[in-house]
Image (cartoon, rainbow, N blue to C red; front, side, top):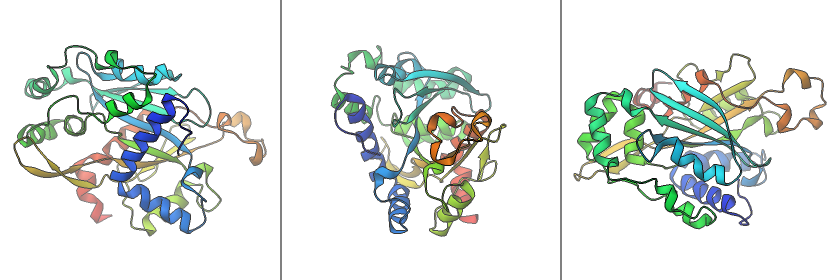
Length: 305
């Protein structure tokens, strides 16, 4: 997971993961158990398939702003995705070289929300009158890393948060968590036998008490059958709001991806199979359900699984 501190991208990814892993307890629970079972020798043995961020589609923010960070580091924008029911757009970005994770960035289509919801979001974001990325030196990894942990707008009130939650759980998550890393993803097919399929890995997760997102089934499968994904349920954490109220809200979670070998490479010996031989990109139907890892019905229903 950790890269050498030799360039801005390494610094940014290391810092993101350090903050995320300290706050998402399932990361250490899973890693420690894999170490104890000898599935991996160190944390660095885990291959990170992708990391994901959520943004708001308002002036000076959203994907058009956020993507500047990773485009500057050699990432390439790939396919666009649209999520009608959740009112989201997204892109994924391929890494500059093998060994770095893909990036997935989504954006809430704020104008598709009710007038009341738009007004709530506007009262927090309207003070941002220029693209904050334009003020950053993207060659300074520490500056960019600090930016990603820095709140761009004021802490919301509990009333505003709860009102957004009723209409868009995505909107509520972003208004409180801002640019916090939404999830990172373990490449299951890179693990040793016995753990390198989602059926096996999900059984392992549940055996250690990890709750899985069941929306659309615990394993979400692309139409071509070559991209299979699962995810944990976001744990609740106590959040303090601007009006002094404390609420338990959804944080971040962990995802798991199994990428199958493309048909034209199916006869390659297993020892010769590289990342380039496997299914790339993402799938709308899979991602649509993965988003629900932070949704109330999944979190409340987790105890019933």
